[in-house]
Length: 281
View 1 (cartoon, one colour):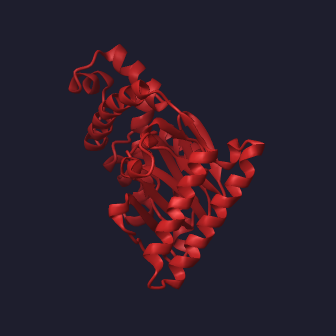
View 2 (tube, helix red, strand yellow; view 1 turned 60 degrees about the horizontal axis):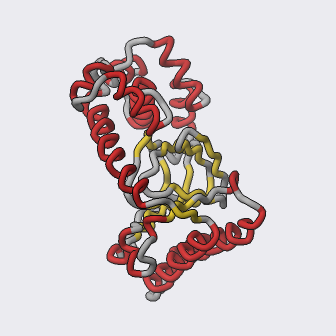
């Protein structure tokens, strides 16, 4: 089955999405903290230069303003994606934005295991509540989200200076400009100097700034964006592979095929065969 999206009391500052992940997400960021809980399938998340593997009934937290990328397993990965606004939680904890949340199974400390298990139980309960859909669902689900936040604050948070928070927000605004520039121009030949000029930055500074904040070079990022668009087009468009490559600004086929195989562990042709053989796609 395919999960539908549901929003729960957005005035509370969080959104709960029960979704089928049919689309990979290229490097991006948002001001909300994100909790990803996989029900079936799997996900590979990259954030701050590190790669994390999320299996069924595992969870991972992407803190606010952290640049991250997600690749989901085919034929389909299903799970819960929760976005929580730290700003809206100031009513409970005034300095919540001065806490960094780090939570994933691969980095658990022994003293955090009990807290991690509680988080997983809360997310299982949230799934059951969604399927039962009693009239009390908004109250019960809101209570669970707040319980999840309590565990994250108690067991998985570390304080960060407010000066670092302010600097990070300023840098991310500029990174967002770069992301938007690439999204508008990835179908064309994208030159490094041209991108730096567009943002009014020195080319050398632009390169250092982008690599420091994303963990990859600017040209690697452009390739990632093209790869993800090509991946989606291969799934949902009937054009030939060559046509799709050219539509997305790729003309060096040999290099592209290696990058595609390294990223998705299959060839474009194998991906298309998988989707044809699977009734869910």
